[in-house]
Image 1: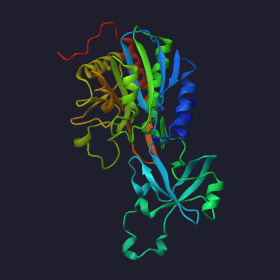
Image 2: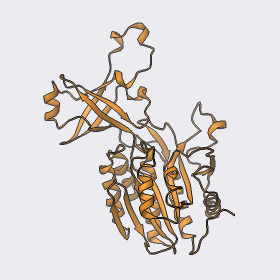
Image 3: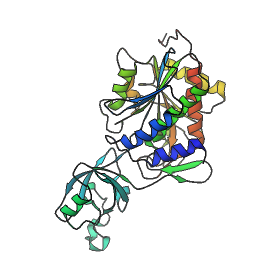
Image 4: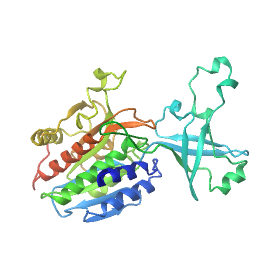
Length: 355
């Protein structure tokens, strides 16, 4: 693996559900310390890295580092663990999965159990599973044995699915959404460290996006950074898989380059500048409409303080919110190049006011 892909693998394999991002955030900051002028974290758990901190305008580049996961809600007398979901899950993909529980004494392996099909009533065999019908089995004989493993109510868990290299430049992981956003903004910052412009840049690995109904870590970090302009990196639906409605979502494919959002929280002047930079740099891109909301950190950033002109750059992703999300690494590289070129092209006195 190249150093960048090795870092991506470590980042994707680190567990970090919303509200429990500390392990993944630590990997991100360790990487940033190799080139950033300053690296720090805040009380919310957001991680920051800056290059040319005195430069202006100040650009915030944000990607959320959390992933969807599970949280233990009850441990019964027989040692079985019941759970609820962190973020939006299709319960069908949880059936039969192996999990990694983030216990107090370290990770504990477990499997998600369900009544065998042989023991179901015929009418139940075709019904969709619900989370309340599932449990986690760690092999403990009773509640005390589970406690001796360091497990207690409130512990989080992730599906045990590490990064897999597929054909060509494609990879699969449970944490693509949106660990790759945190990866891209840090890779863009590394490019800026090698060849900075006059602008200052702060990369932020934000927390709690998947459950951040009031803005999550994006809102607090934007208030802290007080940027002149912000670029958010997230994933969007790749529409080159079967049964996806392109009329609703647009045409976005793996390897087709970043997707630029237009409308809603995506500022029109920043959008135009992103398209100009992409075309000047020979970076392929597609456009996605956002008529009501982007459902990303951009929604939590663009109205902070007196308003932050915000752009949204997304990476096409297949099988979102599953243990096997798929992206093309060429799209990650193109997105990082686009962000770095955007920042380098900024000069003092930039005005993003729509005219």
